[in-house]
Image (cartoon, rainbow, N blue to C red; front, side, top):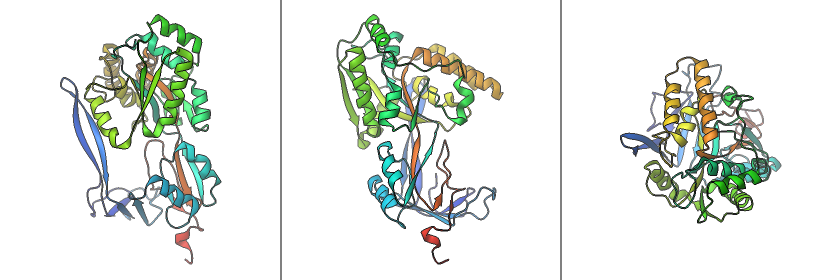
Length: 371
């Protein structure tokens, strides 16, 4: 959080214009337990200048100044980086459907990173008229999803199937329990059998999705209809409604959906369950939609008590196996994060955050012309 310009920056850059702030709201989730909802507030322009006193000179900063243009909508920004030079050098969070456009651009190139993020579905395990309290039904929903088809058809290959909630990235390899944790295969026949055994549905499944991932919801709904023979109603949560939807979920208030698709990231690459698994299953998790799971709480308490990295990994693996078996969420994919970058900018992406300290300019960059 940077509230105002000043000389106190200890990072690679110092703020010289504008502000970038995160406002936090405490929400009661269960009795005395609380979680926090964050809202970002940025001025139309945020300008940073290289900090000459930055402690890690080998890392950077490598550019003199950075200007964030927060008043340019995403579509216009993509037009500017792909079709012009000198207006926009980098666009973050490029939609997967626009990846090919960036690849074809004369001025921009596509930069990707396997981020520590999971695209998953919150399952309302206490929903009336659906058997989601039964683990067989939750497993059926997972078995009915063709993740390989999602990766191919919706993400253009720029994602990886999830096994559990730990994204498969180079940073999390130790936490993915090699050779022990297997993702849900695509098995429509087994999904249908389990769904029938659990009692089936007496009404349509209400599938909600944050706007960015609407195409994923449409694909999942079609797969459920075909495999389970259920009616599925899809609704899109627009940007204006997203915060209230998240707040109501965190506060465990009544919902107008049964499954909500959203993306969650983790800053804790060393121990992903501290954020990802806790968010979806934990007592104070902001995405828990159903009763508290005492066994998960025991496993999580064991994890946070560990001080040895090896024991943390073992405890994290145990949580990932348990959560995968119990299927309290719909495990979908780990999307790559995409950037459109001017061809003369050497941008170094990170798996957990957006950083520019070690980004540099090549000799052909427009700002260096005539130097």
